[in-house]
Length: 277
Figure 1: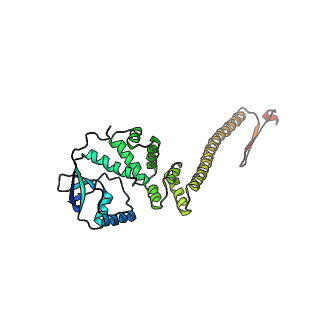
Figure 2: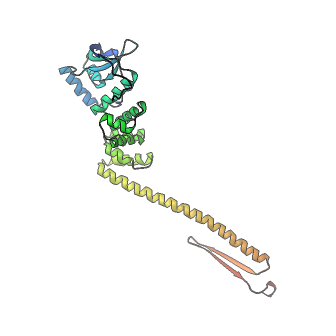
Figure 3: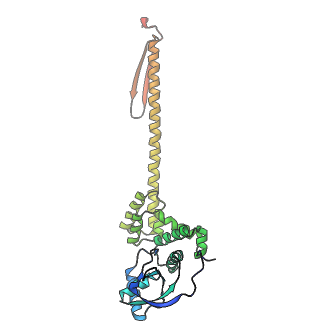
């Protein structure tokens, strides 16, 4: 069963076209290009030429849209090639979109966040479930799910992870924390101390312990506030009772002693009528 909505275009053609006539694919999933590897590819192309043609499709103008092969195109431009070999196809917008993503996924050139975004795009655009996508890409459903969970990290955390060459396992550790501020705090600790995955797991565990203690304290404080409000009600009730006794003409004295630990009431009611006291 094809991942495409329709049939693949028939009879693709191999032709040569100028580099400046090729425009980027707006659905290109790759956001970061390793300049070192790009220069290595450029040197290989300079020596051996382009061994695998790019894939393009014709636009409504004189330009061609790149379907697959952006690294090869960039490298060709670096060495000054004026034209490149391409496979000219008649892919629809949908087919071009899917191929651009799958080509990068299969080449394993994407970072973990680019790959996660690609999975999400395929699921959303093709109305697929995680299980269906896993089957199409020959991956475990848990692999797809774990990748998609990475998108819970905000853009700042993702950039810090990539800029400091942290691993996907570092990123997954951060997901155990509940909010972006805690994750960012953990990241700075990881980066500053160059923590490996095992050390990162220990750090996250300690942070979760501190968060739990703080939450327990907050709950205790809330219980104390509630109890304090109850005590104020009790105190008011005691004062009202003493006033009622006085209004009844019965001699009564009350003293209140309050410390940090307790509130003490001393109420003295006379058994002797007021005129005989």
